[in-house]
Every structure is written in structure tokens, then in C-alpha cells.
Length: 148
Image (cartoon, rainbow, N blue to C red; front, side, top):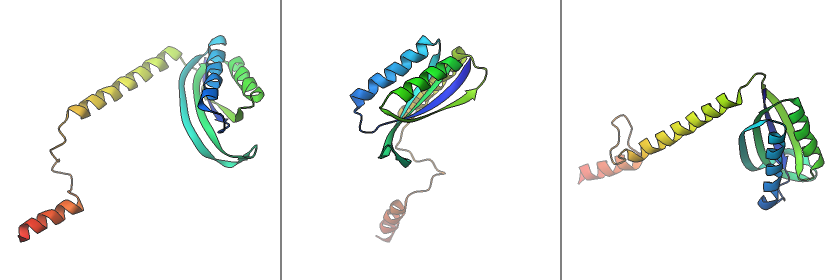
């Protein structure tokens, strides 16, 4: 199985309710072609490098998935047919991939993020480490106190 990444630029005038079926259809295509969706990353609306169909902005989405060549062909065929899609680009990321291993790595990364978030919540923020410089205003306050 190979790992692919497809960047899709969707028409920014399409509402979020109309974008959801587009993404759901892509998920269906991936599962129908025995592929695995690793990640769906929505980047949001951004300015285009050049005008496409008289649009200066586009809604960017990145699909990270595992599959074979027929899956990529079907995804690209769907993007060509759909009028909501302005542009798309598919890139081969890796030739030999095991989807289960990728999912495990993503789960471990998510667990690390959650663990780091809990650790930072438990730490006291009232103490300032000794190696951190104080801000400009704190220095001024201390000088004023010394003069008085």
C-alpha cells in the first residue's frame, strides 16, 4: 500500500454545510477502494497565488491517506467532476506503508499532546524560573520601589 497526500482547493463561496458532503464523499471513496484515511486537515480560507475561475481566495483541505493507484484515480476523477473544487494536487508520500502502524503513531502522538497539556495545567504559574529575564515593566517597577 502507498501513502498519498492530496491538497484540494474548494470554492470559498461554498458554505460549510455544503463542504461537509464533499469531504464525506471523499471518505466514502477511500473506504470503497480499500484505502485508509490517515488525516483530514482543514487549513481554512487563504489567498490564492493566482486567480482561479475569477476567485482570489480558496478553502484549503489536505487529505492524507493510504491506498493504491485506482484510489487516486477515483479521487481525482471526483474532483474533476465536482464544480465546488477549484484545484487539486496529489503527491506520493511513501511507496511502502502499513496503515496500522501509522494509526498507532498518530495515537501515540495524540497521547503525548494530552499528557503534555495535563502536565502544564498542573504546574504552578506563579513562580518565574530564575533563568527567565523579567520584562521591561517589571524592571521599571523595581527601580521605582528602590528610589522610594
